[in-house]
Image (tube, rainbow, N blue to C red):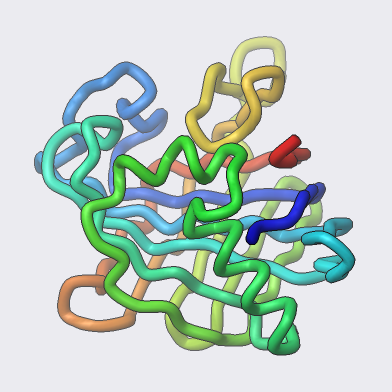
Length: 201
């Protein structure tokens, strides 16, 4: 039986498309294959009475064609800092089994290929964002500034709440090295990032 949950923090995503990623317009990805890594750095959160403060989780995804048509192949990535109860809670939430935003995305998943536990690190400063998940993922992103020196943004975005906006960035590094299907180097392309707050109630 699932529990009520809530999460608040920062997210970062990096994919193989040029800036901005065309999945928001239901267009095929560059090269007709989408490869992306998306992660949520939880500042405050809970699953029932299990605290998820200062933990992270996310996913590696590839699919052919239009992202929002589904057919995703997924690897779940869970923070090594989580204890057994926290890791189980994170996997339940991010696999879509516990309601909320990820449950809405669950029908797009064809297969969950694996679930791995690695140390996760996330930092920001001076317009630059850095993220790593063990030896599997490395993302370095710079903010994209548009007219009037304003931060570029995209709305709506499928992985945040409808009332929130995703900031647009461009990666200087975006590598994934897990196995033959989940290995890519797509630096110099699109990144979305920003604050998030979500729950299943």
